[in-house]
Structure formats: C-alpha cells, structure tokens
Length: 133
Image 1 (cartoon, one colour):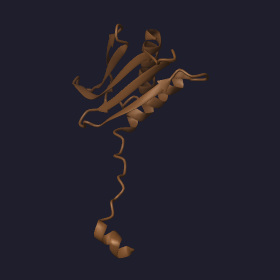
Image 2 (tube, rainbow, N blue to C red):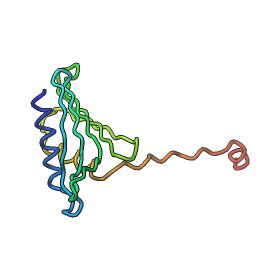
Image 3 (tube, rainbow, N blue to C red):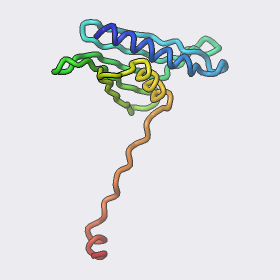
C-alpha cells in the first residue's frame, strides 16, 4: 500500500503543478513527510514567492490502509491556511479505479478552496407552526 500512497501523492503534486500559481504569485515548493510504518503522509503546500519568501497555503494528509475485506483505501484530509475547516475524501481500490484521475480530482478540490458550510434547515418555531395549522 505504501507505493500506492507515494505514487498518489506524486500524482497529486503533478496535478497542482499543472495549476501553478501565476509567475507574480510564485511557484509551488511542497514538502513531504512520510511514515512508512503507519502508512501516513503529509504534504505541506507552500508557494515560493518571487521575493524568496515562503507562503504556506495548506496541508494534505493521506493515509493508506486496507479495509477488513482486504481492499486498499486512501483517506485524504485537506486543510487550508487561515481556516480550521477541513475536507475529507476516501478513495477505494475498486475495479476501474483510475488513481491518477482521483489525484487530479483531489487537487482540484483543494485548489477550489475551503468548502462552503452546508445549509442548515431553519426550524419552525412551535407557536408559528401552531398558528399556521
């Protein structure tokens, strides 16, 4: 599973490079940390600005593991600097799974930014509801 984890991260980073920031915004300078024992990897997403400063953009944590039935799975948690919101995605090794495509989708989700908060239905006050009935 570790080779899947590492190749997935490489595909994810290549997808980000395809959407490289404009030259005046800098270029990607990511850092990887991998724990082979736990099957956990972290990619710190950072942009190297034209003036040489590094601007952190966020983090992607990816864990590779096997489910109880032996099927491989990758779980990715996306986070962005400036917010505590995260998004989690699971990718299962199923027939026809295109790992490169899944890495591109994950990169696109990260590039799209922080997901909007889900809409919460508005509760009807008891008195208003009783008056309407």
